Length: 206
Image (tube, rainbow, N blue to C red):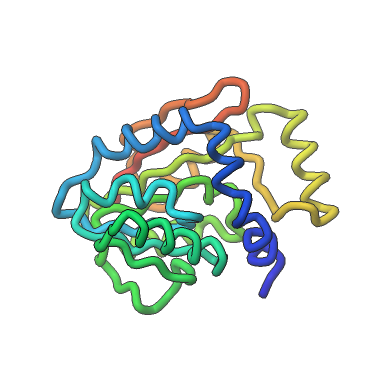
């Protein structure tokens, strides 16, 4: 188990409580996401955490494959889905490079709060492009701490001493470039927070 897995396993029991502090943002993300979904869609939720978003959009799509590197996060997500009798989500402790997922399998890939944590952004962008059907969408929310110099420096220091996983402090222009360079066309960009800049981005496979 690598450092990132250990970190998110430790966070699992507290994750929902911490995220609920920003519940209004999650509600906004879910409502904006639903506008892009069709009942026929097959969706991949990459970095699904405890299923906060997958469980809320399950009624809007055909099926969801939800993956996370944290086994404990997946356990919690499954338990919540079972409690709500949600049948069309398959939760798995896995990565986006899992060979079970074939080229052109998905209509939509959800990427919430994950792009700033990637070690190799171009590699993941290429993989997402492969997995999507023609015209398929990635829907993401990403903190862009590069827009706030002090926060960027602080996160870099905390990451270097090992208290949190490596975090990339994107500027919004850099994030959009990373997505565009993955052979995607950006459809929508919206800043969800000015004080702590988080950007909701939808992009279509070219």
